[in-house]
Image 1 (cartoon, rainbow over the protein chains, first blue to last red):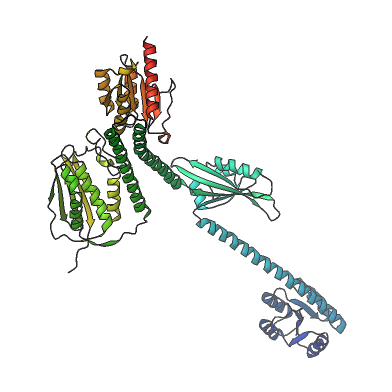
Image 2 (image 1 turned 60 degrees about the vertical axis):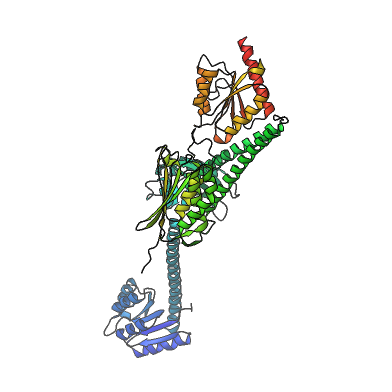
Length: 495
Length: 136
């Protein structure tokens, strides 16, 4: 900022105006002149002056009025009043109303210069004060903006955030934290954390982290379990320090890990189930090998071969189980992008029947195929369809009675092509039906004990149907047989 | 007497049933079999075996336990030693113990599947010896 030096002289006496101008210009100031109050006011409106020298006694707008009008425009402007002998009282009145000082006529140029210099110094101080004031206001505004930005940012976070000071008083929080911990009354911050709800576990951790006074960065992790509704939270606490390393409080970040925990539980249940399903055939294989190696068959080669054959059968079923597990894993991981194409599913079914015929012949089964010739095609993955109907038809063979029938039907409704695989076999009890699509579920009773299977065939079937946006239904009655219906969506041809 | 002792095998896994039968029969035991707890109880009543070798997990997960409980609560049969065999392992969370106060283990011995033939024979012999010792 330039040093202040813009001066306006307002006086109706030409001599005074010119005299002042001469002295001031010589002193290095920029000077404008006005012959009465009205002209003076006009100039102040057009230009910023630092100091005004004005006569109190002027026609038109008088000096006292002018002081007020000028100060309305710029309260920091320095006004020096020039006054005649008899009007000292008026001059005092003028200073009361905001004039900086007065100068009685006649005056020596030196007196004028001293007064102007002092006045301008005052002006400079006033401007500086104003500038500092404005700056401070600006800073406060920015700070307020910063604070509200911070609130907005942590307010958007899915993780809960709580900040407490050394006295465990709540100073900052977000909506997620309020929701997770079910806090109440947070619109009045500054109270102890415990007064907002059940926060014992956090208070405890807070005590620990605030007790560690050393300046090293410490983070404390803790699992918190809440009841009703059940919620598992991962709380991470870290100390908050100022620039000098002095501990101010602690920030707690809360993450809802309830679902992760649930997935973890399901995963270990599945692993334990798989482990058991793998262990049983492996134990049988090792058992048979032990028996053979122990010499229990002595020299009976046929016996030995029969036992080894049993071990081999279990190894074979174990392999089938592992393959099924891999298929399930692939479907669930979405690793196999389905190769969707227009498929005539009835053709696939007939191919599978052909393939499984030798197995069916061993039980002297009859296949009845009533599927109409002209069925709409469906968008499907051929390999998946093969796997799906192999599982269903193979079940219809395995769980059938000797000389039974496997019927293959198909029909079309508004949305779906429906394929039905019916057998005349053992059937299932109503209470077993809800579980047949569960992993490893097998209808296990005297009638089925000689039938081998992985317990995953229908699990896979259901997953395949689901991935094709279809559905699978079952009807069954003990000793009458089972019928599985597969609904696959098709697109009507627009003609 | 061991040579003609009667062993009842109860297991729904036909492989184990047959491999244990092969081992025991070769060593001169008379072997009878059952594939469920219910059938096993019938066999106990009709054949009165000297030792029972019992699978834990059959048609129901704890079929072996309820079978052994019924045997041990029956004054006529409670002296018959039971050897529990299983492939459930610790993964299921079942806690196996041979202690007297253990609610679950009302059996006389316990082995993990598969049981090696020599171990099976040794344990059966031990149980028979214990039984005859108690009887005399």
